[in-house]
Length: 397
Image (tube, rainbow, N blue to C red):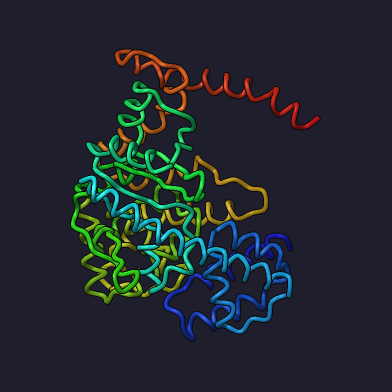
């Protein structure tokens, strides 16, 4: 019975992620809602997948009568998301202007720019932070600009000396900063994805489009073909563990005709992310009812890797949604392994798994000895666990 209840809640969450809005989606939501018997669990799952804004709109449109406490909680959260996104839109535009004035080329990934493109509004899509992409050679200057603007590093936490910053810029791809006064979080990236071979040629200098947020406010993001490939790689990198990412991609696809979808898919293939695109489109087809052009559908059905990866991703989605469960990293890594197309991808994957940036910052070694870090990863992990044990003991007393 517990498994059936979890499946019913997951089916409802999936139905709420369908695009476009209309009778087909409303009917799927109404049917799925009738099977839900544990609404608190359904709400927890919706929160876990970060689709509160989408779910609230879909349930209202389908005229589903929710338990009063669930309806209030969902409405409040959807309103919080909308308010947060309006503030994020204003801050995104302000930071874009500041970076432009400093001569730093930047693009906004996901966030309010994607929300406006996919849903026609910044309100419904959950955005935890502002994703900004800059060129690697501009990363240090962009970090300095944000720090001067009142932002402080939150990941890696604390202040970085010159040696540590060099390590972050060489071995990392992003830093997270938080504004103490505004509470806004910025994820500043100089490499869009962990494995550059999956997104060849895509960076902050790539062709861009301007997303109109208001009559005078325009936010730069990737053009549709690069944006499609990026979203496919990003989702695959996390084994599509959150429905929100799939919903965003599906909503973006819903605004394209077959010719445009074929063009985006072929572009992803040329960039090295064809397997990621195949996985994403297969999931959109199976879960969200997305009709695919026949040429793409046939190619995807022939892809054993896409089918295996889809099974892993669905498992991760459901496991990650279970109460108290954590997404299994082994399944995420297995998904990443299935999606490579060349040796460079697997070299990048091994590198990402071998070098833990926090260890490198905590235990400094000269550059010639950096090869030691992969060998020391297990001892350093045990050392961190031992150091945390006393703290856990104090907290549990």
